[in-house]
Image 1 (cartoon, one colour):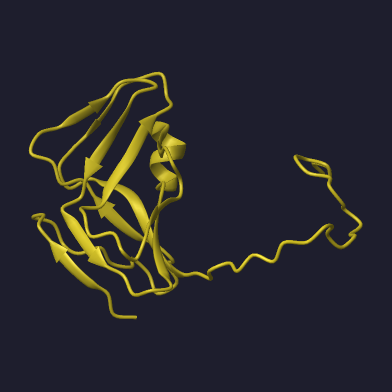
Image 2 (cartoon, one colour):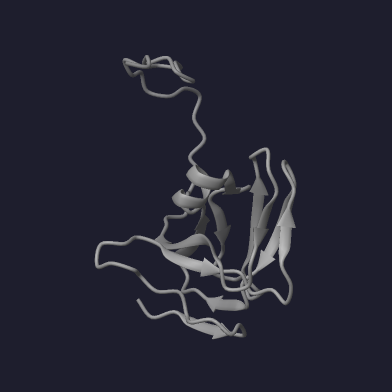
Length: 144
């Protein structure tokens, strides 16, 4: 799939690290370091602007290493970039650890996954079909 992109950063375009990768790393494009204090958040610019085709979204997701090792995650994960958005991609990072975390220019801060999606066409009805699960949710199928 061809996607038009403007790169106003000094960093390379996002790319797949391996043949089987689903996501591409996004890098911070900042003029000075950002220090995230515990439980604080910031929108980190990337310098990237994209033009997605209709029926496609880009999802901004956390990097597993930052989450597991540093407690840094994407606050609205996954963040959705719609096909009609033309602004700069920003990543809402939050520090859920108990120590400050400093973001450097060029640091890989999130992943971008490009995915096709469907649009819903609602059909209003009086009741839904029966299933074994029914209305059970929030752990109703057990934990083991």
